[in-house]
Image (cartoon, rainbow, N blue to C red; front, side, top):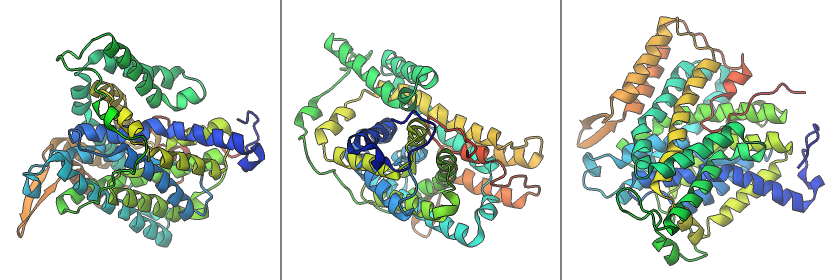
Length: 462
């Protein structure tokens, strides 16, 4: 890797072996967080959730598609989005209308259908930005709206973290401690992949405990390798077509408000890290289209939503190699892993306690990032309008735990708490006088929107 201050923009100058290693580094940076999404969703859907193989396959395919849409210029990797976890949990718990007698596996395609629609909303925002300009659009989606919505996403998932961790607190605390240690005191690449290290080290502890004959407090085995033994080494990812229902769409679609803002922040961060203004060229409308279509395409065949990853922006900062070809190599690695079922089942054997330990950090970080979004953008809470908007969003997002169900014609529709919060926040921001936010005045603040473990500071272009 390059230790000089001068960045490398053509990785071919390093030679193919070093390029392959750089691509592997980017793959590891995204790996822990990307596979964690299907692991968590499987916990919500009682083992009938997202496939790790499909997730990795579409992370790679989505990244390559994004690069095509952005004229092969933006060095971004698209991994699984954490923002939709709350939506998956909500769909798993739906028990009204057509969902009343469904199994968990039957509900999942409807959650994916909602994500397809959420991804298509990116295209609408891209068109509006192209026609009206980003500053005019961002007036309607300021941090006083998006920040509290992100806070609600994290806090609504908190009970799930405690529930999983309580199955074996020792493993949960090991996972949590490792993530904290490497996130705070880790150096170089180790600081970029704290989630992956937390999962790997706690899994090693689980292997040791299992070998010693220890069990979970309830008497169940710590690790079960039945599915691992039965899985083939090579095989096609288990694709599944999504399905559409208005209730599931209304659960998932509002989350796009948070992920679109995350995308804009990540583009700002990558631009500052690399020293090129990708918001202007190839243009934010192009990157939004790439991200949105990658998300919709993934969900269409049973995968999670995709989003640009701050972890990989951290690797760009670490290596000083800014060539997008290296990111595309990482995407190819991810696609290859998608065809290895046994590898997927090994990951799937992860104890729920480890998932809980990781979630303790992750869900809290999501909410903390919402707080950071508000603080970094200097939202003035001495103004009554801002207090009112934030208060109503928080109460709606957390208070309507079961949502609002109503019937139109013969169709039962449920508006979730997050959907109600998003609608209320946007309406109040549009109605109440005294807007005090302009996108672009503080690039470092605008960039701090991503829902990831490693926010990358903005540097002034040299």
